Amino acid sequence: MSTETGTIIERKARIFNVQKYSIYDGPGIRTLIFFKGCPLRCKWCSNPEGLERKYQVMFKEDLCADCGKCIPVCPVHLHYFGEGENGRRQTEIQGSRHNVNRSIDCVGCRKCETVCPKQALSVVGLDKTISDVLEIIEQDALFYLSSAGGVTLGGGEVTAQPEFAANLLMECKRLGIHTALETSGYTKLDSLLMIAQFTDLFLYDLKHIDSERHYELTGVRNERILDNLTQLIRRGFTVKVRMPLIRGLNDSEDTLNRSLEFLQSFTSYKNFQGIDLLPYHKLGINKYKQLDLKYAITEDLSFKEEELSRIEQFIKGYDLQVEVIRH
Image (cartoon, rainbow, N blue to C red; front, side, top):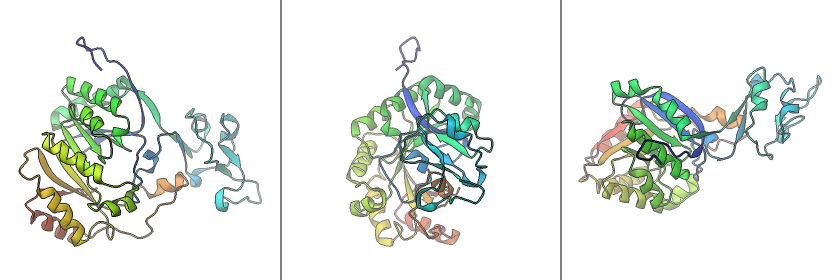
């Protein structure tokens, strides 16, 4: 942490993306820092490259020229010529095709990424210090100032790297930058409270109100999530609840009623800022193929505009502020 003289005591975190000029994740224009690693496995996740803490190779098969330049430079022999899993890339008459051995862990050297002439390979994950990330954040300080924006930490799951998150947000506060945190809430309360003291706004997920169904959809139960949400609001931290909306999975009238009845108990708290609805989208599907992962949802579960408007009005009937986030 910073000393009284402003010196930063460095930590490192594994980051997988930085997105500038965001207008969806907190007030104003924001810089999003995406942390790698998440304890949940949501069936609709649009950032599969953020699930694992380890380095990963994303392979755009349609761009690959099968030149083989990546094979000799990889120190752990991830890349090879031959038939992939389930015959994904068959051996052709002219020779074998390039594949990635997913049973071997990437070491993050990025040599394959560097030599690939077609940009078919990219290594996901960068270890950055607090100073590294602050340098990126401060590049857009004028935008924060003119729009009342700031920095938002997301993922993955930020609270899986809590010390770094707390230190980074503390430095942002020292610089007068508004701070926000996107979280599933699935973490120890102590970790959440350590981060909370430097967080101006929590964007807190409520994926399903029923714990058993939550487990089926995300791989974890929701008791800890609901308890942590309650603690944050009752302790005076500013919270906006984010509800992903996926047709057939969490949009039934009973599910919505139970979720809204739970949230209605917080309407007397001025620090509870209502609900963001996040309708299902398919923006991350191509990334699953690049990681050799299976996307669990096979149907189009998105909503028509009139359906979203109807659900929005339904929520307002509970005297809850609500906004539909349309990407």
